[in-house]
Length: 472
Image (cartoon, rainbow, N blue to C red; front, side, top):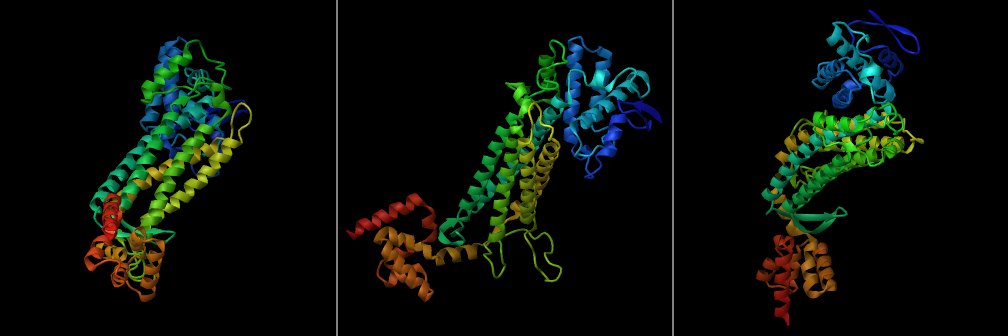
């Protein structure tokens, strides 16, 4: 055991631990959720990047001995490489100071060990050396930005894979005509490929929105220390720390245009959360469509087949549920809830610092991970294996009463409406009624009321105009 002290008093710490007295107090004070920052290792990596950059910057400007800086950097690398597991026991709903000091203590004890052979702070102090030129108030929001940037890399990668599969499906289904649906009612025909092209474009748009939000994560308030005035830093520190952080993280970081604004206002996190929510809502909507299109198999739409992954009932034999689309919908609800918590936390900030950042930290990372972990499952185990029920799709398209749109375009809306009423009352196709009413010959009806023609606007307009000209 070793004895450590802070402004509260002394506390014994097991000598196998690299964290210290402030971490131990926070560990017991905030043990509420069962989740610690070990659940979100990218966030710890982001803080380690900051500490390493600060040590290099302070060494470069002569504010920190090179030997001390090198030891801090070596210790930071161990966090970055995942070698300090179990040393970050603080609950995610702790204050930012506790998280910052947890990392400071781990780095100080490990750096001290590197230099002296033992833990302690006689050579490297968590506040004096590891936290030099910093405050919790700039380290914590900067770590949120950096970890968000890294999460966006992973999210964009997974969305890109999904986009590629959707593009392949839109090509594979290009000639499969089906009925369109608006307000859950029969509409004019559309191809399954056209529908999937819409999903593909949706995901492409989400990727672009992610890139835009990711770029916003490069504007930081690091170096502003307590309230954005840079008090406690040495000359040259600001430019040096951004230079080193960019090299260490691989992120093109820069100071915010107004660092004071970065302390007062956390609306940038609202943009990040809104982007994540947009991705989640888009995936949820797509999943709802897949559930409807695959419903059945005997009393639903049954237009597509989803891969059969597991039994869907404990009592009904053979029932298979669309479990992965349903999972995506569940996740969307959670992410929307996280977005609300983030919104409230941002709005509640007072004056020169927002202290309500624990929900921001926790909810952003949870939302990112829910998407990053679920999208590859959804892509590979669901979307990639979707097949079309071509026979049913064709049957629906040919029986649609909305095919009378062609008749309306040629003979007027009233004529089209009368055809629909007669077809509906007699349970006949539009084609059958149109021929009986001598609106078209059998050959003309076969050509003009072919459902696939209604999915090709230019060709359809051309044939309508030719036919209307023949009536004059």
